[in-house]
Image 1 (cartoon, rainbow, N blue to C red):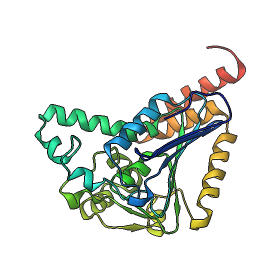
Image 2 (cartoon, helix red, strand yellow):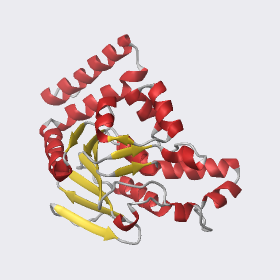
Image 3 (spheres, rainbow, N blue to C red):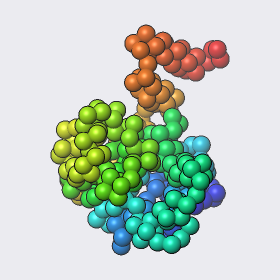
Length: 266
């Protein structure tokens, strides 16, 4: 997990879980590190991601989510889902309805913290991002794709629904009709189409992925922290506000900025 030691860089690898956390100043990097299984995700990984969110230092402004190997994430680890352990789909099905939804709510926290107004999150995606992998990228504020990236919301192929916080963001990005088509077909979406649909912030050659993400993180950090947080809040809330409500939100945000910058304290 995160290190409590002071210093510009901290890192700890948890091989048995498959998640690595590193911090360099205001930039935290979360890496999926199960490349031998294409970073297929498990409840243990989700617990680790949730733990990272709870212990994230307050000085972190940018969180980069990346993955080792040739794929971002192949989605849910089917060997766990179809196994006999406590986290298997069969065990989940045996729980009461209330307990099942509580368990799923716990899984969701591994993803939804990336939407926090206090940070800007960036997914660096190469290769396949399937199911839970696609939803992990969707929960990030921005997605930089290598030109070999492929998205797929494949839950339908298992008779399941996307349940890790991805459906609202997907609908906001591509509209309800296209989102429905993506979810009910489970088809693969190549990087160039993802770019056209608005799923990608940028598409770059695979060799340039890390550099492009680093440049984007630096550009975010160049903005004043309070202004960046207010802008994220304004844009995140815009879809549910009327024009008049958004105008008011802008006025209130600007008023707070002026007070902070000029020290009125009001």
